[in-house]
Amino acid sequence: MAKKVIAITLYMSELIYDVQNKTYLTGRSRQTGTNHEEVANMQANDDDENANQIMRSIGNAFANLKTKLSEYINESGTSTNDKQLSSTGNLTLSLNMPPNYNNASNDTISTALHQYLVNSAIGDWFTITNKNDASDYITLAAANLEQLREAVNKRMRPTRTNVV
Image (cartoon, rainbow, N blue to C red):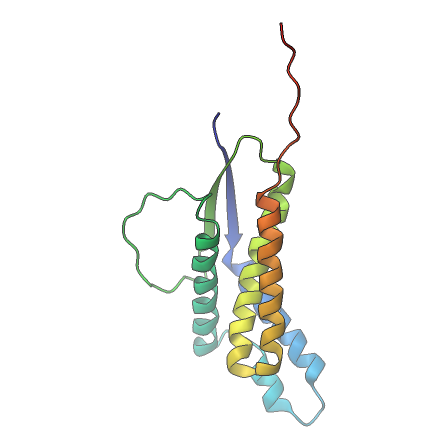
């Protein structure tokens, strides 16, 4: 039987926005009125050094995801590089799923992929800027991977065929 191909596009602009928004909200919630510098350091923004770190973190997380999903990914490339991702590009995956894969899990897979990348990038960011919160996001990323594993393993119930 033919494999089902699930095409997934993750928009870099959405990933970056989520990283910046979550770090902003974390910083705002930690603000006491006297810790302005600490709060500012918690927040990812578009400064070159910040953007470079976020892009590198997203790239590392995406490479890790491809390894985790390698049994479902069919790539024909024989070379690679460590060039940093572009903030204007998109990330795409094409998953080759078994014929009895349940397509109802497509949105869950897409969401889990997105959240894994965001939480991994924030975990990396906070490892540098706010170690106390880093483990929370690394734990969230691990939970996203578990959700992803569950979703890619959903199958449709078999149906009985009529014997003639």
